[in-house]
Amino acid sequence: MPYSRDIFEPAASSSQTAQFWVRCRENLPADPLFHYCALAFASDLGLLATSLLPHPTSLFHGEVYPASMDHSIWFHRQPTFGDWHHYLTDSPWAGAGRGFCRGSLYDQQERLVASVSQEGMIRLRR
Picture: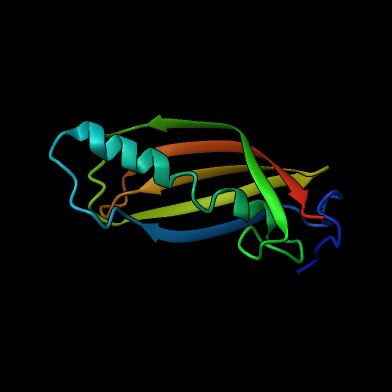
């Protein structure tokens, strides 16, 4: 897979995808608001990391400072976030110290629960 040695330069093939499963480990109250909030919080985890896939680092190596510039979420149905959700992410563009990412969260019945988009700033630690 081609990658850029510099996170400030777009990779030759900058479109990247990732997927993982996510849920709340704690028992949430029955009030749907808690499930919406937990899913919204979790939707930020790992999303910006997708933009770094073609680069020789990750958000988890401690070499970069990530910061969310914006984060939007659209709920399509009420989540039950004690259950597992399949999170599909993609990053159609990354470069100039920024990454743009999108995500889709599906419930166990493969129904779309939420859509997410985010642009983040990524700076190297000196």
